[in-house]
Length: 438
Image (cartoon, rainbow, N blue to C red; front, side, top):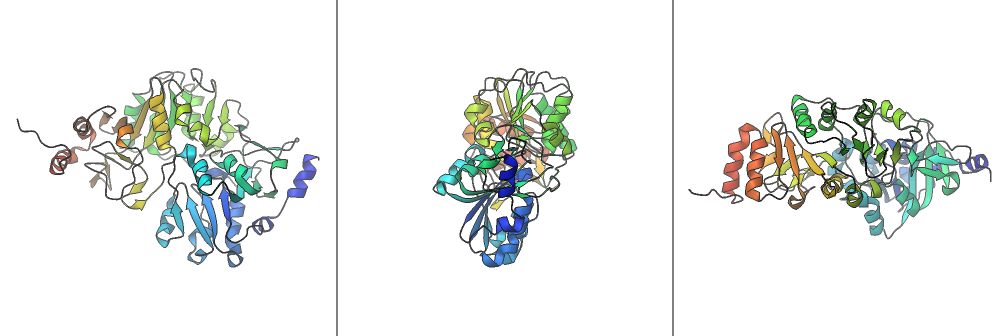
């Protein structure tokens, strides 16, 4: 059948598409900049006819009534792979819960727990080309795996989405229905770097050699790194998330991808989140390839890159080398994402390094982020036996292969000066590193 005819046959209004959802079903959705804005906005309007509908989300970027409003209790329950500010707000009300995961296995494990069944998938895509192919555009983390498992697939067509290359193509014949919603893309402006973050960026940049392949997270610290890489040559990108800073490095001739082991000559990632500059850059760019999260974040794939450097941020690090990046005590804050995946993978790489960065203090200097032991209830993101390198504005601590006493000394050197004696005293008081009489 002609692709245009298929398109017309499958086209529904957004209310008609949401009306296909039934009580007690589960909906899986595309994530971040690929979230189906129209469908998710409409869902709350069907509250009165729906009960016990579960919705799987990951880093939703907008405020949706089906998540936020208290009257949605009993109608919708949200399971989330990565919290944002709205999710943290709703969590105490009991209508949302975190899904512990490592990104490269997120969909696989979740589907296994659901006996491989998913009732509905909602995603986004570009308008189809003349042959009926669409691009899933800015997100490929779990989307294709969820589509393969779903009984009903509905894609929200948005002409503002860039056409991205790699494993993103889907044919109109592979979906059950489409809706149209040409919503503006969510833009995530790079965070300005503080003085401390700039210092951290300088230390991390000093660890990056010519020819390295990089994975960078998001925020002030990763953004600060790029400013210190102007004299590097032939860097590559193999990342979970494409960011604006990577575009800057490419346009400056610093990222060439020429010395990459895998996907030589190309940047590779699973999703993109940034400004229009980033979205324009990835559009129809043969030098940028999107692959599924199960590929980009597989530690054994990452480890095949020569001189792979992974940079992630944390909330707390303790003397044992345990890293917490996802909770503040018992309070869940964000998620594991691909942190452990990329940290492990980098250390499997010849000449690679897994870096965890954090400011030395929080709450305007009132508390130390380097602590004797993680706060009660803190979730361990990177276990002590897998830690490599920690960086603060005071320097670099090499922890891999070190005993706990050596780790303590290295971490004290990069802790804020106001807390160094306290760390040593507490380590002795708790018996973690007893003082030795001379």
